[in-house]
Length: 423
Image (cartoon, rainbow, N blue to C red; front, side):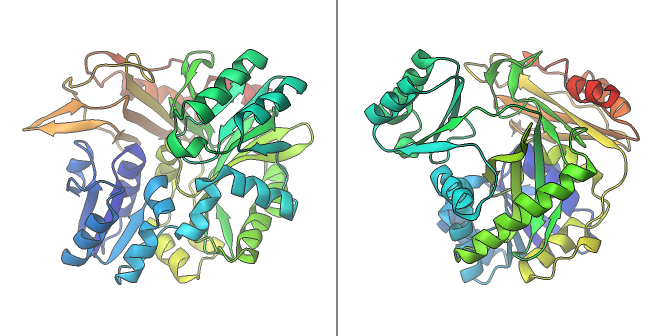
């Protein structure tokens, strides 16, 4: 089989490595891929948002199955275009991908169908939003409606920060049209949990839960990033909470989308807060998370391609999705200065990986035989083990063997999770 994967980050590298385990897979293409993915797939410089280019490539290369992973092409309707061209696809339609493409849509969906989430108000006028915030309490959460590379959320500690955020998003258009509408939400407290799930629009099969580390600096300080590391499973996500989430959030969400005529087939990501009043939805994503995927897929025992085909065909059942016991940790190596200004173009030296180790490359380019850094988040060092403590130790041991100038990583990935296990 010829497989096509759309995207070019660490998440896509993890998906590709997992798909390659299937003996039926003869060729994997990546559009655009990156310098590290090139070791596992044939990469071509077609942007993930170039739908015409993607469809043309898929048809001329006689692709048997395509996997669309990033949010932008999903929201633009990449799956719809590929399916219309006769290419079977994993991923939601544009009609379903709106669950991430518009935070206002997803908030209204939750309100309409009684899915637990933070209280919120929607605004299309900056001055009205500011007047509302002046009467409100803090911290407050301000979200741009549309896609914003994971950076469209501000937690304002006081009115001055809130007013500044509203003006930047709605008046200065720092996220473009994504800031035409905003949500102002109550600030929830409790442990955060990421749960990726496979769904064919009827059945929901959650994957192993995970814990992301968004802040740039140790101790969860500094600016928000795309994610500096992850661990799985998340110790706060107990069997009892998982059961409650299935009954009050996961199945109701899929049923709500069906009722709206927007059946969701693909990977539905639930960003949850375990509040004192129970689990609540912080956000939905219409795709695999990054870097959550990098710790979840190495724990997958069953075949990813088979699962993806079952999702598309509407034949998903829990017994096709099996995860091994144990844990995984991903430590992200970034360019010093990320998420603000940073330099790249430095040669990366990669070690050989062991049986329970993986390196998923996110931001790199090839120059001859050399791989050079080409992004803020450069790669993820991943280890699996019987215990979370050993997985964390293994991931850091692997990370220490990777070298490039101005490499930076947090030193406390997994610390909070390990502390929770001792509580």
